[in-house]
Length: 595
Image (cartoon, rainbow, N blue to C red; front, side, top):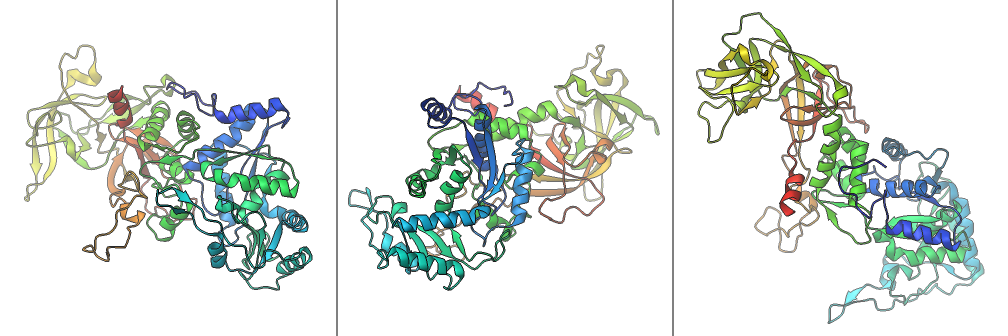
């Protein structure tokens, strides 16, 4: 694991935690003699930052105990799965630094094995073919309801009329289901457990359903598909997984996990749950992320505003920052929400040490140095990264006409404004102190250029420079600057908890008293601003896609990469830079205030 600058959390993948203690107990008791985990994504979407936590736990726990970790695709829902999702997932796992070597598996490879285990359970009299519809099964199971004391109760459900079919009839019907004799949804195979169990999942859960969808790997060879709760434990057992690490919502599924393993008489894999990652201003559900893509609220799965690993990669996040973030938040047994500001803090910690510096001007304004000779240029030395002495220096060119940011000049300055205004002096970064003498305006009164004079004795803040100025601004030589397109990204959602939405007022367009809002109501309309007027140092024009920079005084930026989702990217001749995160460390200020 990467070293971190912060105090280590006692519940981290790199330290002591309750999952490690469970594994140690299992090894000490002889329940298992080795450790084997698996990372089991469903290929129905792209991985997001929540999967990063699960992935790290699966791979790092195996590594810590000298074991192995499989990459298994739980692909039992052909309607929603696709090979493109498989390839995207593999890219992300590799990017985060994990390797599954020759341990790549698919639940779809186990269909025959799963079918035979289902037959075995039928022969034991513990599964039956049911003719109830999906809606009727739900009705017969019953619903959890609060009683008069607001305590959740689950009244017993009702047995299906077909629950006591003879074993031989069930075997015949199940074989005919596989053979394609029955219509989609007309029959299911259900486990025979207990319709009075307080846990609704234990009330005769469906094991197989009929669905004539083409599977991306098996084609049309199957028309019945196993349900996740049936496939999950038995695929683990097939691979002899010792510890199946799952997020906390699967805790209620554990009795069913153990029931299927026991009834199928297979390897006794153990399920352990941990709290999933929740992040402010973020939606971490593939279902909702898919909706954002399909309804064009974002450009693609790897839109830099998305919390997908591909989106974060395109935004400029590093694997080291994400792994450090997950290590710092630790492993818990109860759900909580992490402030996105802490994620940005971990990102800045990494980028500050690794990113080259460069100067760029987003909204240019001409600065003319009146006492600088026409045609004269001078090479100045700039530091590439003050945090890394080995990064060296670069040459930047100084000339009579420069570009500065528009907001670095005010003709009538507000209080505590220390940048350029008539009569005030500032230092040009790595260069000279200049004093503003005035500005040029067009007939409409818009400032077109700022004029100043420079002091030749103040180059680069040398030791003999006794002048004190309170402002330093960045700049570019107008002759050398290269045009850029810069995309400023903000949070995709304006609300801290996007899934918490108010009821629409009947006075709002389309609103009714009973109509709830949607998480889409919390989308931030200012989440993306495209600036096509920017300029940068010449080095920014030749940087490779994915190369990261700190634009001095502006933030961290990354040269945009082609979309992995096939999105049509920038077709112009200007390099595109995406803003990763600003320089201001709000999290550090919050932490200091709370100390």
